[in-house]
Image 1 (tube, one colour):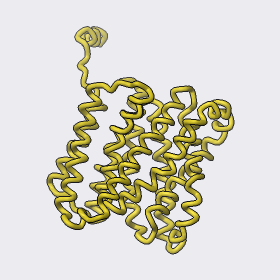
Image 2: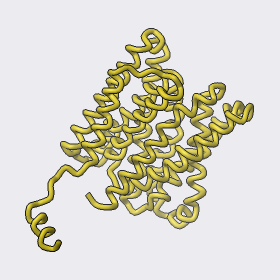
Image 3: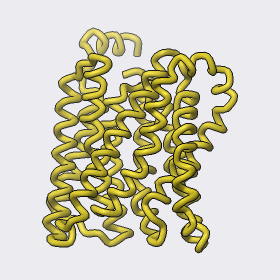
Length: 310
C-alpha cells in the first residue's frame, strides 16, 4: 500500500467522520425542513468549493468542456443527494436514514463501475462490503425492533426509499468526479466544479425553503456548520482521497459514517440502539479493517535484508 493510497484512505475516513455529525446537527434546527438543510449544506458548501478552486477551474476550461456530460450528471446527482439524504433522516430517523443512504452506496458504486468501466472487484472488497452491509442491516433491524410501531409507520418506507436515492446519487457523483480525475483533471477542480454547479441548482430550493434559518441564531448556526464543515471541509478531503482510491473503495470506507451517526444519535439526540445494533456497528468497523489494512506479510527475503542492513 503506497503512501498516497494510505493518505487517501485517511482523508476519506476523516471526511466520513465529520459527515456522521450531520444528522445530529440537523436535530438542533427542528423548525427547518430537510429540503432547506440539504440545500443550505450542499448548496452553499458546494459553491464555496467552486470559489476556492476557481483559478484551477478557469485554467481547465477546455478539459472540463470535454467532460461536460460527466459534469451534468455529477451536478444533478449533487443537487438530488442532500434532499434525499436529509429527507430520509427526517422520515426514518438519524440512524436508519444514514445507514440506508451510506450502506447502499458501495453496492451501487460497484454496479456503476461494472456497467461503465467494466471493473472487477477484488475478493477482499467483496468480503469487506458484505460484512459492512450485514452491519447496516443489523442496525436497521435493531432500530425497528426497539421503536416498534413508531419506526414501522408509514414514514419509514418512504424514508428508506429516499435513502436508496441518496445512495445512488452519492455513488454517481463520486464516480463522475473520479472519472474526470483519471482523465487528468485535478481533484480540487473536478470536485469544485461538480459541487459548484450542483450548489447553483440547489439555490432556488434554498430561497424557497430557507426562511426558518433567519428565525433564530441556533437555526443559522446549524446552516453555517453544515455548509462549512461536513460539506466544504469534508468534500475537500473526500476529493483528495478519491484521486488516490477507487470510487467503490472510497464509498465502502465511508461506511464508518453511519457508525458515527448512530453513536451521536444515542449520546446526544437520545435515540436508543439495542445490543443487536451495536453488533452491527462492530461489523461496520470490521469491514473497514478488511478493506483498508495490509494483511500481506513481508517476504522472507525482505526480512533477511532488514536484519543485514540493521
